[in-house]
Image (cartoon, rainbow, N blue to C red; front, top):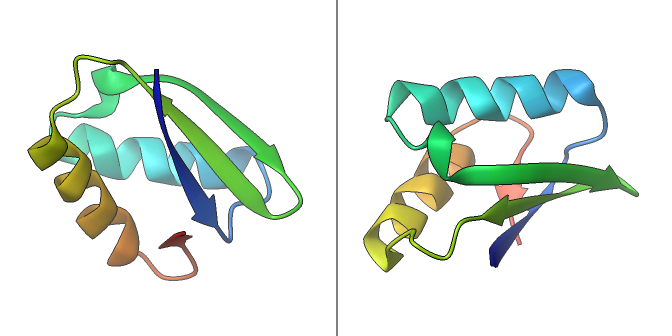
Length: 70
């Protein structure tokens, strides 16, 4: 399982916003789980997600206000 840490996520609304953005690029099915603790979200991704898809995910999240992949 691959994971990304996202600073700025603190609630279920944050999870929904990130998921919606990933739906727009067709990568929401790659997410197996999102956990939030201490203002940082952990996005768990399927092992089948390619490096190029991970870069797309980082770019989409990076372009959102208030969130940053760390």
